[in-house]
Structures are given as C-alpha cells and as structure tokens.
Length: 447
Ligand SMILES: Nc1ncnc2c1ncn2[C@@H]1O[C@H](COP(=O)(O)OP(=O)(O)O)[C@@H](O)[C@H]1O
Ligand SMILES: [Mg+2]
Image (cartoon, rainbow, N blue to C red; front, top):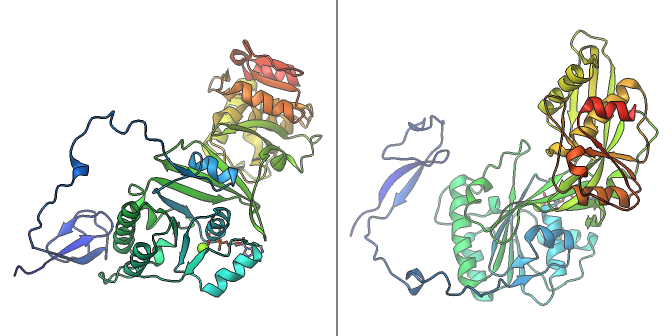
C-alpha cells in the first residue's frame, strides 16, 4: 500500500515545500507553514455526463428560480431574491448585525426548510435574540454544531432548502488538525460545504467575520468559490447599515440595501434621502445638498464643511466620508482657480450620516459647502449641486442626471446647479436648472 506523503503548505501564499521552515522561502512570511498529508494512491478519474461538451444553446431557455425574502432592500442586492442552489458569503465586522440579518431573513421565508447552524452562540442566546427581534417563524431549525462533517450529515439527511452557517470561522473539519478559523480550515470547510450545497441544491449562506481594518482574514480565500459575496457595513454613528454585493453571479453588483438598526433589528430604509436629511439646518453656512447614486438609486445627502483660520502653522485637513486626497485636490482647485486663500485655513468636511462616497458627482457640492463656509454665506436653502470638478476648475458632466434631478425635486430642492453639458434636453417640471461650466462661473452665480 502506498504511504501518504507529507508536504508543508504556506497559509499566506499557498506555496508547497517538502521541508518545514520557520519562514516561507517564497513569500517570506513567518510561522505560516502547515503540515499536510497527501495521499499517494492513484485516483481513477470518473467522467460524468456533466463534463461532456455541449452546445451553448442547450438549456438556454432555463430560467433561474428565485426565492424572495420579501425584504426589498435585501432582494434588490441579490438581484431579485436567492437563486435556488446558490452559495453566498455574508461578510462584516463583528457586531455589525450579520446574525441579526440572517435570522430576520429566515423569518421571512415561508414554507421552506431552513437550518441555522451557529458555531458562535448557544441556542439560548439565539432564542433570546429571536424574541427581541420578534421572529414569528418558529419552524426555523437551530443547531450549534461546529463540525463540518456533522453539518454535512444533517444536510444530506434533512435535505433543507436553506442553510446558514454562522460563522465559517467557527467550523472545523475533523480530518484536519488546524484550529478552526485558520486559513486551511476555512478553505477546506467552505469548499466541501459548497460542493455539498451544490449537490443537494440547497441555498447556503456562509457568515464570515472581517477584521476592523477591513482585512478579510479567512473569508477572502472563499470569495472565488461562492456565487455571491455580500458585505454588511456599519455607519460611523451606528445608526444605519449598508448591504453591498461585491460579487454576484446572478445579478448586478451595483445595488445596495440600506437598513437602520435598533433593538428590533435591521429595518429597511425605504427612503434614504429623507433618512439622511432628517436633521438638516439649511440656513447655516457650510452645508450643501448633493445627489449621489448608489447602484441605480439616487439619494440626497448633506455635505458639511467648516473652513476656519488655523491657529497653528500647518493647517488641518479632515475628511469624513470622502477620501483625503480628493479633499486636498478640491482645496487646491479652490485656491488656484477661484483665488480662495486656503493655505491659512483649517478645513473639515463631513458627509452627514456617516456615508462613505467615492462618486465624483458630489464634487460640486463639496466645493459649494467649502466656499459657503469660507465666505460665511449660506447657500440658497432650496438648492442642490451636481457635478464633477476637474483639475482646471471645469465642471464636468455626470451620468444618471435625470434620476438625480427628479430625486432632488421630490424633496423640494427646486433650484439645481448642474454641469452645462447635462442641461441639454433635460426638462423636469417645476425645477430651475442652472448649467455651470466652471467653478468661477458657479461662484458668480451663487454668491
Ligand atoms: N438589546 C439590544 N438593543 C439594541 N441593539 C442591540 C441589542 N442587542 C444587540 N444589539 C445590536 O446588535 C448588534 C449585534 O448584532 P449581531 O447580529 O450579533 O452581529 P454580528 O453577527 O455581525 O456579530 C450589536 O452590535 C448591537 O448593535
Ligand atoms: Mg454573529
């Protein structure tokens, strides 16, 4: 009988070595080599009918079957609900609300057999949470099993429609000696569970923790394996949560779901604009309304800026919700193209509500808010600002202009400053559209 061979596998870069080393010879990581047994037995390759090449047109008409969760914010992110037999990863920082969301989702899915495997909490804790969230569906099956082999056994035996594994970092394979949560365990368990899920056609959701710095220690290795990767992010003020899809084999990755979080759990925010503008004081200098797009949805956000003479040598620049480099660029444009002496000013910029926005279409409102604070003159209270600002101070056109203008109009912002190029052929009832082509032009109009 052929003996098993031992190899050493680097958990950082995946290289394999014949000898153990304290430092991986390939990537230089310390203490990352793990022992693995490789069977020398020659395996016979079975060729199933599935692997026979077939024309593309075969099965073309087959439509994806979806199960809706009846939580619109969640369904939209998935592209219209769970696809039967799909495998998902839900990542997020500890405490953001992943277990809460999973329980709420299972509650909404009726007439399906759902098993919730929790390796983190006791049944008692889960029941207490279920009471707090007023979970109605008493048929959800609970198990506190951590062993991958046992979970697979139950999946085989009970043939459920939906399985939640909370979290993948607590699951271990009895065949491996590594501790649960190590890359080897996460890789092995998620791989085997995914194969099992595909075999029995069961929707499987892996919950995975990511670290505070956004580093996805274990779950990153399984992103390629699953069909859909979702991330639940928290706002800085802890009030709302954004659910994003980073990868989706069955839908667009543009959509986001917005939830507010309280003791009754996560509640969908149907109207993000009114949610984010609820405490606005429009008369104060330094506040401006921007219209941002998240996926195909426009929503209004308030941008606040405080520009004040600095008392120390080096002026401070602080940005919440936008990248620091973008702030530095816009300050430089203000200085060079509009003659604002920003070198002696501290600048603080904040996107109210703790949203993080990468979209450049909010640049004009950032510039407007900073200028308004610098001059200590408030902007007209019914105005909103849309446009990208370029390095030479030009205001550049942005996509989805009609949706943005309509959203602003819906909330009473009737006076909209937008890129000149976007004004063409645009007509929204009851809205005054003012096209601007540069920030000098813009400042001449508003101040
Ligand atoms: N009694 C409570 N009232 C309000 N919010 C609570 C309560 N208990 C827990 N939470 C919220 O739920 C969060 C934990 O959610 P949970 O689903 O366990 O997160 P995760 O699974 O992502 O670690 C806490 O951070 C807190 O915000
Ligand atoms: Mg949890």
